[in-house]
Length: 405
Ligand code: SF4
Image 1 (cartoon, helix red, strand yellow):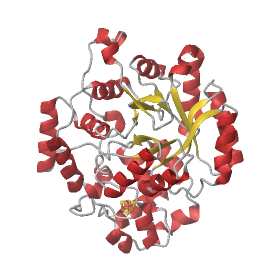
Image 2 (cartoon, helix red, strand yellow; image 1 turned 120 degrees about the vertical axis):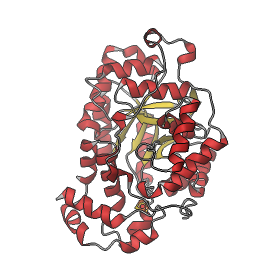
Image 3 (cartoon, helix red, strand yellow; image 1 turned 45 degrees about the vertical axis):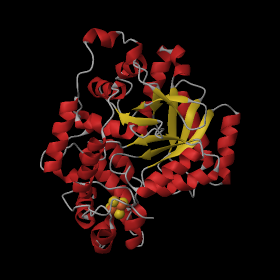
């Protein structure tokens, strides 16, 4: 598999090492007057798009549920009010409290259940365990169905065998789920491409952002999914940390977006929405400032110009070595799979870029102790040479190894 962004990619410090700003510190842009927040009019409702050929329409902005939902019911209320009706959670988020928080909302607002496109995920390959997790999720969320159920974090479609297909069919027949699919953060392009051939996948949530959207293999994989009628949701749309002003491209980009009335974070969302094949974009919005800033971007009808997209592409090239593109099949093959580089990169990203300590711990908790202990002894030089993003893999693995001891 080739990646078109390998060319021109420059080696610079990994963004996560720079102590960059976390999601909770994303800049915002004021959107509405206070009284408008209380009662939005029809022009302030987030638009919808078709979710593949499923017959469902979903809001183009999806509320990521990786925050303390039980104590932040106001976020759900606000999301509902502005038409952010696609809610994404997982059995594992917050050790179950994410789903419990959604359940609390539905208990207080049962009339809203039918208006929400509800997604949850099970991190398991075992169908019996998936049944248990599904039933737990339904109970926690005070609902008797989930609109779209995902197998969580696949890095290949190998687990999607006939047993899983039958499981999904059966769960649909019983009315426990309406649609079935998976989420993917690694080897996304090959996952999308082979899912398109399966013929029974309804929806996929994939890492997708201004860095990945220019890659030829990503474009082809997305196109295959669209032709197969699969609804696609983008996640990790910020593509790493905040834009700074340490290069000419960054300064030009920041200036241009400020002139247009966007923050760089809003511009990154808009870049994803420029692709009509992306049905929705999932964003972690743990406070009303970020939620309203993202709603503002979703409502803004100004399109990004070709020049804007060009600048973002250039920025992606300038800062490529600060972003792990999830193509773990490349680097892990070079070290004969001795270390799950892709998972460790995600661990570092959640630890340092997004400040999501709990979630990052859950990623490494799945890595056996003996593998963690061997990280420091592995020679990553050949993996580094093959990395299309020119990431200093060895340094980062040693850093992670120190953190994991
Ligand atoms: S370290 Fe490089 S090769 Fe490995 S997953 Fe990240 S971007 Fe791809």
